[in-house]
View: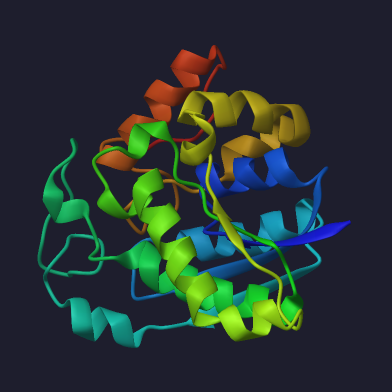
Length: 224
């Protein structure tokens, strides 16, 4: 089976993306600890990596990014309040470029042809989730390994996301629940670092809406 590397946060999007791809690829998951408040997602990633049978799962510590990001965004800042609706303060500058660069480096060494991340059509507010960004990054990475590709030492990669395939968050949920059943509610979406989902941050609200749109009764434990 062909190999693929997936950026695997432990959130519902990346977990469901694995569910969507697992019948077609041997999947290698890579999770990043970048100083995010919501480190519960890393615990979820470990659990789902085993549950979904990833061939390998790496957790990469890039905590130094928190110092670089400072208070530029609410996900790494200890001072800024997390909003309940989208604000640009939620956007972590080119976070996906950082993740995908490292994931693609691993993909080239594995000779994997696909690098995936969980961006979907509802992520239109985030520039580094859009298909145009993924296409340009894909082109740049392949150019960066062009000699290896031309000499057949490396395989050309494609950067895939549900967004590039026109899939929404609710589409992912419909696909994921077939594989995960009720364990899907153990995925971690919340931006806060609490035992249960806060239920009021932008990400929790998006999660609630997506389950409703998918026609799935949401059994996630929310504090609010």
